Image (cartoon, rainbow, N blue to C red; front, side, top):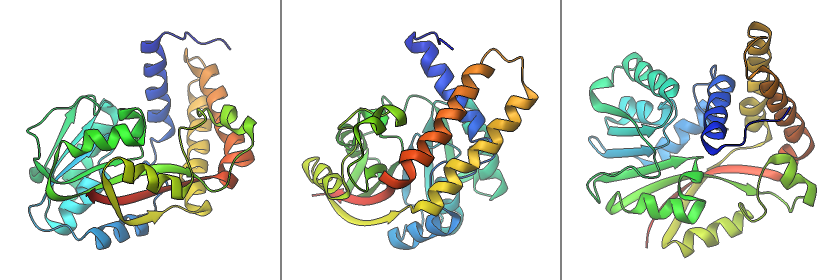
Length: 258
């Protein structure tokens, strides 16, 4: 099916598709609850630390750290659907008074410079046009001595040429794990720690969307985007089975400015 390729249309469809696909997810990345808890143990946030999460999704990291470590936070995202879920989660954990959720473009969000002890962008480095650009955006918000957390894909081994097209990725967008460290260094940061997904956690994140989308298609056969959503599901499923599970890794990298 041909899709209107106007930029606004593509953005709307892409966002809507992810809102549908991840409607049953609480964590919008390949981390499990246990690995998200491990990330907190590694970073050791202190009470009342200020935390900015760019492209925060449903705000699970912000809400959990506010509950577990008494941090304060601001989450920025363009999705009304995800932000509603984030506010509900903050209420559920009893931390709504410690968190603000703002509907805005995380790539252009402006606040007082050097305002936060922790700045995170977990799996949305498209906001800065890639890893190095996103780290530049994050750095302007970070206080001296603060830490940053960035979620990013990397290649476990070099993929075949056809994988880029099938996965919908430009060649050079991601690099190896060591190459990711190089990009972090080139952006003026030092890699301190990392928590990586594995094939099983990738499966739970990616395959966990397939049933959700299938149910949505059964319930909404007349939706104007139903055929495109079916194509989205077919390609997402096949690309993971054929290439993603074998070649593509993902992790959260804990870093700080040099």
